[in-house]
Image (cartoon, rainbow, N blue to C red; front, side, top):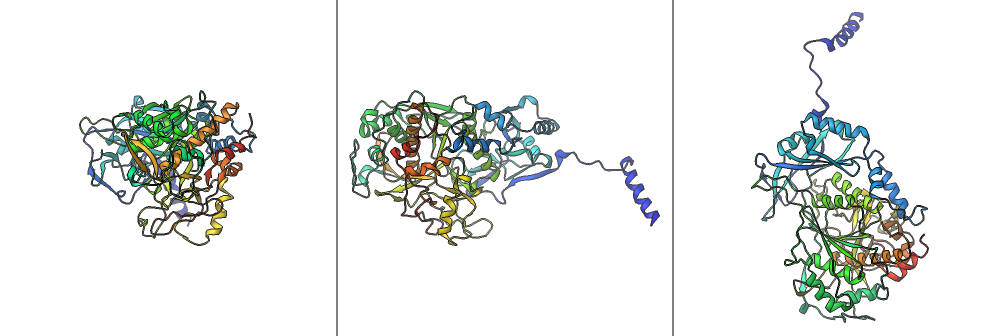
Length: 590
């Protein structure tokens, strides 16, 4: 036994000096999977590898040194019960809160040097929390990430191609330092949930309300126009007084542009005192603007935010992205449009107080790390004092049969970014008196847990739901929508023609216009804007909402959820009453 012990000790001691010993591999070769799809995501087909010499721009999101600092601060400045309520942060303060640990940057730089990435290709933003690698050869990106980038296109379309990989990894030592790398496994192009499912000509509807002024409505189904909404939600008598300090923004993607001529025609029919309404266009990441090719989505959003919040200044952000490769000159893959827009905002010294977006994707289309990263960026906007509003989707609890890829049965499909806990998600109603729109997107996130502001409202709904739909949804997830508004039979002008449209693309700009007026009221009385809305809405703000208690949102072959007393995943907390919401702000600090 002694001889055996000695022999083992001798071998262990001698091995480091033996000429035949195999050196340990560098840590950069130990690549562990970060995210992968088992199959190519639905509706996409691979067209092969990109041409030799193709380059790509990679964005690396680094984890903050103090992981919860930003979210903790967001809640403190957004909860009216907090002594720090309204103390929104500057661009620099946000950057400090989300800065990575110094060791993170050292490790990342060592990794990139190992792969001979030139320093001229590396840049940082947001206090070093994001790293951009510009013009990286695809072959080098494959080596860095253990990936296999290919060219993809939606099946059966002539859409522009994108450059993606079905899986990627990072060295094990970097997993605790990196949130995600973009673009990698996110396939869905922005707008898979574009919120206008159909439009109808004027002759296809009846029961038209007077477009100039409404004082009462007795008919259940009416044409919805600004006059109806201003009467229904009690904004008609409010006169904005802080237009010099207040801005409302609408985001646009996929070459969707509003028309100034259509806006003028719309106002001439619906609100003559606002016929001079206009908007500024800001183009991001190659986003275009061609008013000769207007789009109903953009026109709807601008026409209704303007009609409610006039004369509040408006900005329309046209953001490019979603295409990834130019086969003619092998130029770098263009960047993700969601990311480009939010990074532009966070790099700006001043941002709009209210921001409306009517786009989204099924949550299941997004890699979890990607969704979590983007959601965290919306939290940064909230911390800076912006009210970030998203439509909740048009497919109830989900479109189609909703069968899970793993064969585990039916699962409801939440929408993102509506499922992000740091945005305000807007569902839809129909008729007067109001009931839930059957298409109103709603449910529970599979990626984000229930936020603290929902700790009372959501469990109350779940207790009434009981075991119905057990296994179909995540009972511990963030519930959405938060609030709702009219979403059916909206009159618009598009390309000089009159149409009626439906969807939560109607309700979201309606709510955004009302929130902008509330911000106007606060600014006019020398107080800070609302910022992130949800802690207020689920607190004292609920006194300014009309509870919707009828209707449901069927989908996935089920009846969906039902609107009940209190919060529900169809209409949220209810619809806004401007005058009552204004009253809840009376005690806000100056």
